[in-house]
Amino acid sequence: MSQEPPAFAWPAASATGVGSMPGTDPAEAIAVVLGELPDLPHLPELPGRGVGADLTGRTAAMLVDVPVETTAGGWKLAARPGRDQRRAAGFLAADLDAAQEAAGEWAGAFKIQVCGPWTLAATVELPRSQNPALADPGAVADLTASLAEGVAAHVAEVRARISGAEVLLQLDEPALPAVLAGAVPTASGLNRVGAIDTAVTRDGLRAVLAATTAFGLVHCCAPDIPFGLLREAGARAVAFDLGLLRRGEEDALAEVVEAGLGVLAGAAAVPSRTGSPGPGPAIQIVTRVTDLWHRMGIPAAGLDRQVVFTPACGLAGASPSGARAALARCREAARLLPELIEEGTA
Image (cartoon, rainbow, N blue to C red; front, side, top):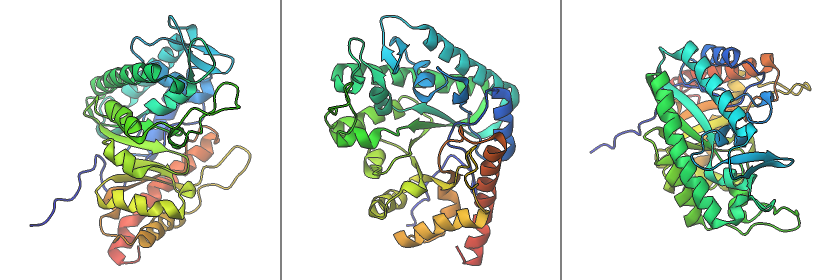
């Protein structure tokens, strides 16, 4: 009896963005995303607007009954919501208004991004010290529960505003490898928060992913991604910077690929405002992925369904034209891949 192929939330030959975009105008950003990524658009993040639009602050706007405020070093737990938490909520509302205006009639996959529980705990400080909340298991539990509730409400609001959307929920976890390795610094910088047990880490991720029926994935732009742990936590896809993937991690990636998880492959270089090289030709982007599949010993058949092409990381540091070019190249690469598979050259 043949095994059913895995179900993915996106159509074949798709491309998307990691999340962040340059600029400060949400209407302009969503117009670019919808124009360049017609198969899998995402809700743009605009950290260029300042405090409250950053990864931690944006997600702080979603927290339920866990107030935070800003400090000289970032964000910390507080007795009542601070002005910047309200500012973050205003940014998020403006982004949703722009998305509803531009994509209210959209039908299909639509990705949103939030800070994952472990990166949140590593970047939000405790109220009476400058140590990260990660150092206090009770604070971590409160943050995770609040985040799960807030994410569920956020997904529900996106679905209400874009009724035809099949929502993909991306948890951004750049600090996850450091959390597992005990490498997150304390306030003094002289010590590190102890490594968090893998079972505890898995359960925290699972609590947030399971809070909604959205297609859940985890993005990590750091080396040493714990692919197996992400699968155990309930992620249905993994997203990463292909340039940071080490040869020793390819076996672990191969296991989750063979288990049917989707892959958002950060294969297109991110151009910067300082003139670093752009994303390169589409064939070069495709080859980076097909070469990886060959090294892992996995047939190319179905690759165009399982893999989504993305820039290597967020595009906040790119120029508007550079960001548009990176997204366009990802789209071109995604559409080139099926032709190469059919020709047998992938």
